[in-house]
Amino acid sequence: MPNKPKVSVCIATYNGEKYISEQLNSILNQLSTEDEIIISDDSSTDATCEILKEYASKDKRIQLFLDQKFKDPIQNFQNALYKVSGEFIFLSDQDDVWMENKVSTVSQKLESFDLVIHDSIVTDEKLNQMYPSFFLYFGSKQGIFKNVLRSSYYGSCMAFRKSLLDKALPFPKTKEIGHDLWLGLVAELTGKVLFLKEPYLFYRRHAETFTMRGLGGKKRSIYKMAVGRIIMFYEILKFLAKYRFGTSKKTQ
Image 1 (spheres, rainbow, N blue to C red):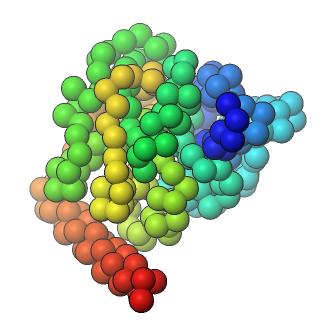
Image 2 (cartoon, rainbow, N blue to C red):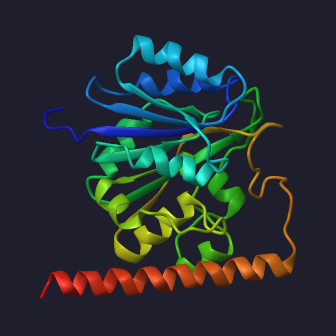
Protein backbone atom coordinates (compact mmCIF):
# COMPACT_ATOMS: atom_id res chain seq x y z
CA MET A 1 0.00 0.00 0.00
CA PRO A 2 1.55 3.34 -1.04
CA ASN A 3 2.16 5.85 1.76
CA LYS A 4 1.12 3.29 4.35
CA PRO A 5 1.48 4.73 7.87
CA LYS A 6 4.34 3.15 9.79
CA VAL A 7 3.30 0.75 12.54
CA SER A 8 5.06 0.57 15.91
CA VAL A 9 4.36 -2.39 18.20
CA CYS A 10 5.29 -1.92 21.86
CA ILE A 11 5.91 -4.91 24.11
CA ALA A 12 6.82 -4.75 27.80
CA THR A 13 8.44 -8.00 28.88
CA TYR A 14 9.19 -9.62 32.22
CA ASN A 15 10.07 -13.31 32.58
CA GLY A 16 8.19 -14.18 29.41
CA GLU A 17 10.39 -16.97 28.06
CA LYS A 18 7.54 -19.47 27.85
CA TYR A 19 5.36 -17.63 25.32
CA ILE A 20 7.30 -14.70 23.82
CA SER A 21 8.46 -16.59 20.71
CA GLU A 22 4.93 -17.59 19.72
CA GLN A 23 3.74 -14.02 20.22
CA LEU A 24 6.59 -12.46 18.22
CA ASN A 25 6.00 -14.87 15.35
CA SER A 26 2.32 -13.93 15.19
CA ILE A 27 3.22 -10.22 15.08
CA LEU A 28 6.19 -10.24 12.70
CA ASN A 29 4.19 -12.07 10.04
CA GLN A 30 1.83 -9.07 9.82
CA LEU A 31 4.34 -6.20 9.68
CA SER A 32 5.91 -4.56 6.65
CA THR A 33 9.66 -4.09 6.27
CA GLU A 34 9.30 -0.45 7.41
CA ASP A 35 7.43 -1.21 10.64
CA GLU A 36 9.04 -1.74 14.06
CA ILE A 37 8.71 -3.65 17.32
CA ILE A 38 9.91 -1.82 20.42
CA ILE A 39 10.58 -4.15 23.36
CA SER A 40 11.38 -2.92 26.86
CA ASP A 41 12.38 -5.59 29.38
CA ASP A 42 12.03 -4.98 33.11
CA SER A 43 14.57 -7.06 35.04
CA SER A 44 13.77 -10.49 33.62
CA THR A 45 15.62 -13.29 35.39
CA ASP A 46 14.77 -16.10 32.97
CA ALA A 47 15.80 -16.58 29.33
CA THR A 48 13.55 -13.82 27.97
CA CYS A 49 16.41 -11.46 27.04
CA GLU A 50 18.40 -14.21 25.34
CA ILE A 51 15.38 -15.12 23.22
CA LEU A 52 14.81 -11.46 22.34
CA LYS A 53 18.44 -10.98 21.34
CA GLU A 54 18.23 -14.00 19.05
CA TYR A 55 15.18 -12.56 17.31
CA ALA A 56 16.71 -9.07 17.05
CA SER A 57 19.88 -10.46 15.49
CA LYS A 58 17.81 -11.86 12.64
CA ASP A 59 15.23 -9.09 12.19
CA LYS A 60 16.16 -5.41 12.06
CA ARG A 61 12.57 -4.38 12.81
CA ILE A 62 13.06 -5.39 16.46
CA GLN A 63 14.57 -2.79 18.78
CA LEU A 64 15.53 -3.93 22.28
CA PHE A 65 15.81 -1.89 25.46
CA LEU A 66 16.97 -4.34 28.10
CA ASP A 67 18.15 -4.13 31.71
CA GLN A 68 15.43 -1.74 32.87
CA LYS A 69 14.91 -1.63 36.64
CA PHE A 70 11.39 -0.21 36.89
CA LYS A 71 9.74 -3.15 38.66
CA ASP A 72 6.56 -1.63 37.24
CA PRO A 73 4.72 -2.65 34.03
CA ILE A 74 3.27 0.84 33.56
CA GLN A 75 6.69 2.47 33.52
CA ASN A 76 8.02 -0.34 31.38
CA PHE A 77 5.37 0.30 28.72
CA GLN A 78 5.94 4.03 28.99
CA ASN A 79 9.63 3.48 28.32
CA ALA A 80 8.80 1.61 25.11
CA LEU A 81 6.21 4.17 24.02
CA TYR A 82 8.65 7.06 24.32
CA LYS A 83 10.79 5.37 21.66
CA VAL A 84 8.22 4.79 18.90
CA SER A 85 8.55 6.39 15.49
CA GLY A 86 5.38 5.05 13.86
CA GLU A 87 2.10 6.81 13.20
CA PHE A 88 -0.02 3.85 14.30
CA ILE A 89 0.91 2.27 17.64
CA PHE A 90 -0.12 -1.20 18.81
CA LEU A 91 0.32 -2.46 22.37
CA SER A 92 1.15 -6.11 22.95
CA ASP A 93 1.46 -8.37 25.95
CA GLN A 94 4.22 -10.97 25.90
CA ASP A 95 2.05 -14.06 26.15
CA ASP A 96 -0.90 -13.67 23.77
CA VAL A 97 -1.20 -14.56 20.07
CA TRP A 98 -2.33 -12.15 17.36
CA MET A 99 -4.84 -13.40 14.81
CA GLU A 100 -4.32 -12.92 11.09
CA ASN A 101 -5.27 -9.52 9.64
CA LYS A 102 -5.18 -7.76 13.02
CA VAL A 103 -2.69 -5.16 11.85
CA SER A 104 -4.26 -4.51 8.45
CA THR A 105 -7.83 -4.33 9.78
CA VAL A 106 -7.08 -2.14 12.79
CA SER A 107 -4.77 0.13 10.79
CA GLN A 108 -7.58 0.76 8.32
CA LYS A 109 -9.89 1.76 11.19
CA LEU A 110 -7.22 4.09 12.60
CA GLU A 111 -7.56 6.19 9.47
CA SER A 112 -10.86 7.41 10.96
CA PHE A 113 -10.43 6.90 14.73
CA ASP A 114 -7.90 7.97 17.35
CA LEU A 115 -8.05 4.68 19.25
CA VAL A 116 -9.36 1.25 18.27
CA ILE A 117 -9.95 -1.61 20.68
CA HIS A 118 -11.04 -5.01 19.35
CA ASP A 119 -12.59 -8.06 20.96
CA SER A 120 -10.57 -11.15 21.87
CA ILE A 121 -11.07 -14.84 22.53
CA VAL A 122 -10.08 -15.72 26.11
CA THR A 123 -8.06 -18.93 26.28
CA ASP A 124 -6.14 -21.06 28.72
CA GLU A 125 -2.36 -21.41 28.50
CA LYS A 126 -2.65 -23.93 25.65
CA LEU A 127 -4.93 -21.59 23.67
CA ASN A 128 -8.04 -23.66 24.37
CA GLN A 129 -11.07 -21.37 24.33
CA MET A 130 -12.48 -20.34 27.72
CA TYR A 131 -14.77 -17.49 26.61
CA PRO A 132 -15.60 -16.68 22.95
CA SER A 133 -15.90 -12.93 23.56
CA PHE A 134 -14.04 -10.88 26.13
CA PHE A 135 -16.32 -7.92 25.34
CA LEU A 136 -19.44 -9.89 26.23
CA TYR A 137 -17.91 -11.55 29.29
CA PHE A 138 -16.60 -8.29 30.72
CA GLY A 139 -19.28 -5.87 29.49
CA SER A 140 -16.80 -3.78 27.50
CA LYS A 141 -18.02 -0.42 26.20
CA GLN A 142 -17.22 3.28 26.10
CA GLY A 143 -17.91 5.85 28.81
CA ILE A 144 -15.71 7.77 31.23
CA PHE A 145 -17.68 6.87 34.36
CA LYS A 146 -18.12 3.25 33.26
CA ASN A 147 -14.40 2.76 32.65
CA VAL A 148 -13.32 4.47 35.85
CA LEU A 149 -15.50 1.97 37.71
CA ARG A 150 -14.38 -1.00 35.60
CA SER A 151 -11.98 -0.57 32.72
CA SER A 152 -12.73 -1.91 29.25
CA TYR A 153 -9.38 -0.72 27.93
CA TYR A 154 -7.02 -3.68 27.71
CA GLY A 155 -3.74 -2.78 26.07
CA SER A 156 -3.30 -6.11 24.32
CA CYS A 157 -6.37 -5.30 22.20
CA MET A 158 -5.62 -1.62 21.62
CA ALA A 159 -4.02 0.51 18.92
CA PHE A 160 -3.96 4.28 18.57
CA ARG A 161 -2.56 7.19 16.64
CA LYS A 162 0.71 8.89 17.59
CA SER A 163 -1.19 12.15 18.06
CA LEU A 164 -3.13 10.54 20.93
CA LEU A 165 0.06 9.28 22.57
CA ASP A 166 1.52 12.79 22.50
CA LYS A 167 -1.46 13.98 24.56
CA ALA A 168 -1.38 11.06 27.02
CA LEU A 169 2.34 11.10 27.93
CA PRO A 170 3.68 11.17 30.53
CA PHE A 171 1.35 8.79 32.32
CA PRO A 172 -0.04 9.85 35.73
CA LYS A 173 2.35 8.97 38.55
CA THR A 174 -0.02 6.58 40.24
CA LYS A 175 -0.59 2.84 40.01
CA GLU A 176 -4.35 3.44 40.25
CA ILE A 177 -4.56 4.08 36.49
CA GLY A 178 -3.04 1.56 34.12
CA HIS A 179 -1.34 2.86 30.99
CA ASP A 180 -4.04 1.30 28.81
CA LEU A 181 -6.93 2.76 30.79
CA TRP A 182 -5.28 6.18 30.71
CA LEU A 183 -4.88 6.03 26.93
CA GLY A 184 -8.53 5.02 26.61
CA LEU A 185 -9.73 7.85 28.84
CA VAL A 186 -7.63 10.44 27.01
CA ALA A 187 -8.99 9.14 23.70
CA GLU A 188 -12.58 9.50 24.91
CA LEU A 189 -11.89 12.99 26.25
CA THR A 190 -10.12 14.32 23.17
CA GLY A 191 -10.95 12.18 20.15
CA LYS A 192 -12.84 9.28 18.61
CA VAL A 193 -12.85 5.70 19.91
CA LEU A 194 -14.01 2.54 18.13
CA PHE A 195 -14.92 -0.73 19.87
CA LEU A 196 -14.43 -3.31 17.12
CA LYS A 197 -16.60 -6.36 17.81
CA GLU A 198 -14.53 -8.83 15.81
CA PRO A 199 -11.82 -10.71 17.78
CA TYR A 200 -8.22 -10.35 16.60
CA LEU A 201 -6.40 -11.84 19.59
CA PHE A 202 -6.11 -15.06 21.57
CA TYR A 203 -6.02 -13.60 25.10
CA ARG A 204 -4.06 -16.19 27.04
CA ARG A 205 -4.69 -16.64 30.78
CA HIS A 206 -2.23 -18.70 32.84
CA ALA A 207 -0.70 -18.99 36.30
CA GLU A 208 2.10 -16.50 35.58
CA THR A 209 -0.19 -13.79 34.15
CA PHE A 210 0.64 -10.44 35.80
CA THR A 211 -3.02 -9.80 36.58
CA MET A 212 -6.21 -11.69 35.85
CA ARG A 213 -8.14 -8.38 35.85
CA GLY A 214 -11.64 -9.63 36.49
CA LEU A 215 -10.96 -13.21 35.39
CA GLY A 216 -10.29 -14.73 38.78
CA GLY A 217 -7.76 -12.25 40.16
CA LYS A 218 -7.60 -10.95 43.72
CA LYS A 219 -10.25 -8.40 44.70
CA ARG A 220 -9.45 -5.19 46.55
CA SER A 221 -11.30 -3.86 49.57
CA ILE A 222 -14.14 -1.37 49.04
CA TYR A 223 -12.07 1.32 50.75
CA LYS A 224 -9.08 0.85 48.45
CA MET A 225 -11.34 0.79 45.41
CA ALA A 226 -13.01 4.04 46.49
CA VAL A 227 -9.66 5.76 47.03
CA GLY A 228 -8.52 4.54 43.64
CA ARG A 229 -11.58 6.01 41.91
CA ILE A 230 -11.07 9.35 43.61
CA ILE A 231 -7.47 9.43 42.37
CA MET A 232 -8.65 8.58 38.84
CA PHE A 233 -11.19 11.41 38.75
CA TYR A 234 -8.56 13.79 40.12
CA GLU A 235 -6.15 12.85 37.33
CA ILE A 236 -8.91 13.24 34.72
CA LEU A 237 -9.79 16.73 35.96
CA LYS A 238 -6.13 17.69 36.08
CA PHE A 239 -5.66 16.49 32.51
CA LEU A 240 -8.75 18.35 31.27
CA ALA A 241 -7.60 21.60 32.86
CA LYS A 242 -4.16 21.25 31.29
CA TYR A 243 -5.47 20.11 27.90
CA ARG A 244 -8.13 22.78 27.54
CA PHE A 245 -5.86 25.56 28.75
CA GLY A 246 -3.10 24.45 26.39
CA THR A 247 -5.49 24.16 23.44
CA SER A 248 -7.06 27.56 24.00
CA LYS A 249 -3.64 29.12 24.42
CA LYS A 250 -2.48 27.71 21.05
CA THR A 251 -5.52 29.15 19.25
CA GLN A 252 -5.00 32.69 20.53
